[in-house]
Length: 448
Ligand code: DOR
Image (cartoon, rainbow, N blue to C red):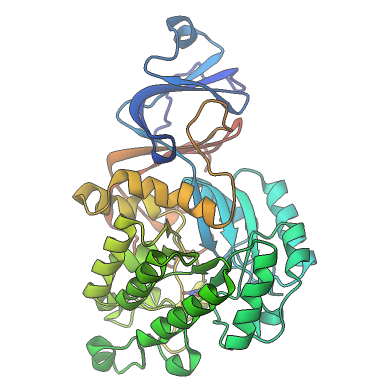
């Protein structure tokens, strides 16, 4: 199950050339879906086309040939929404383990939310995260700084300073900016720096004490519910504010059919709104919480089948732009406890491909849209250069075996935390290799 991608003994340590041989290369942003060879030299794509590698190159000792036949070669993924717990809660995840998990999941870029300890509301924290990530190497980290100081929803952060230090957007994720006045100012202020404002949409007055989605199952379990309208009401208000200010507004982890309807309508009127959805909101309903499974306590909560259907449709038709993991590591301390005591969140970076390929295999999500929602679309939200499969581009590549049957176990994960309900099940498809620049950031079977 964990054999190396290229089992030939002659693989050179520092190949002059890497050839991905006979891959199905898929990059909708380049209009590409074809069986080709992709050649990488000193970290750049230098040639791409059917039989692009010469027989001499394929036979050369100085060339590393990766047999990619019957595999998909994709641009490396971009995650808009992860929680690495450094600084402050490194026992759950640190920047090194978070980035290793990201590389194993096929990600070349990860945007990290500011709810660390201390909160990333100053240049010093942003710079510290950037420098830790730089020394870890591999997947690149892009901090998302707080909208308000201490995520208290009152006073705006110094967004220009944070942007200059490397922040690609602002969010108080985990907490909603409740005040309309503060949200309006945040949109106006961020607009002057062309930064997106990413909102965690939750009317906290409507969710006080909530443990899961409000509905029949919450009633049966005797748990207080989180009604859909707590999300929808904030989305509706913010869309009006985004329209009034002309700012770039992004909805984090959309979970309801109502939010989808509002976003679709706003987009049709030309409002600058983008949105993301998580794999767990696409694949699970509130039924998963039955048995008081704390791994299925997430914020926003898992909803009902009608919501899942609306989210899937919205992702397929582009109303929801991006897939984002909301990778939220927690230790047994926060999860092996009563529902009321448990922290919300599940990890996700290493599970995107196995979990979501089910939608691609079933035809619910076209492969091109799946790739776009993990590459070009999220990169656009935070104005990053998207990984792409074109000659001259930096090599940022993810090789996926779409058909291999396998089981994801806790032991196979790079993340420090194992809080996900998606373990110990069999899947079809997984990431085999992630190449970032001139190095393999992940090779299955090689770097554990
Ligand atoms: O489930 C969640 N966990 N949702 C959030 O918004 C925050 C996150 C966390 O930080 O654990």
